[in-house]
Image (cartoon, rainbow over all chains, first blue to last red; front, side, top):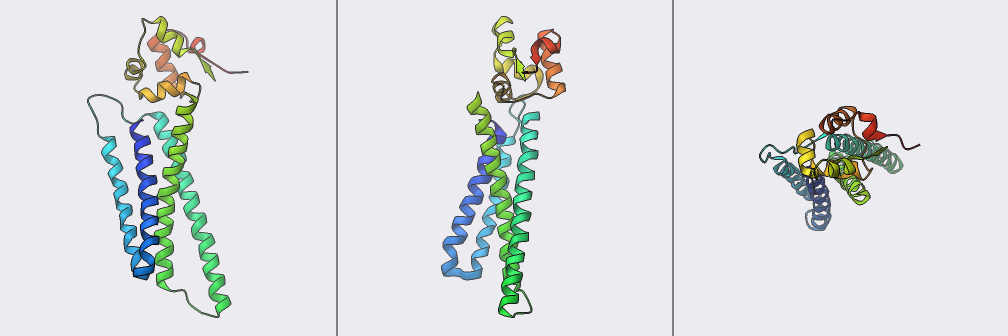
Length: 136
Length: 65
């Protein structure tokens, strides 16, 4: 398994774990459960796999190509989620006759968007590496 | 795209994938994917591999038509 494949697995596991913890805490903490989104910070732990060992190449052109693809997929999914969520929230508020959107709702959306970006990026990375290694 | 990197490695005194990877500055996993036809190398990498085997690039890589 290459270093960047380990990074992709880290991103996927951190995003899934974060979403599970946030969902599990919500019944007890309510909006305070958004604090668990801080677990996403563990995604930087993936950098540990990128440390140089001797003169060996850690990241090469194939990794960079997959990284570009995963970043695009993650950003695309995150923005689509945000647009659709904002449309849904806007329509919901209009239906209820409210003239404002709670800052708490926006806070949830932004954190969820970030988690989706990390999760989709990791998932696409894992699938890309699996597909190439299976062909081999 | 097809290639005969695996055959050339064998003919070149059983060069290992890691040795080839080190010489052309990529990871061993990229050589594995390349030999399996799962990865199309950049022109720069194809040229480095051709230089390593001392063969024209079109003798190592060709289009699957």
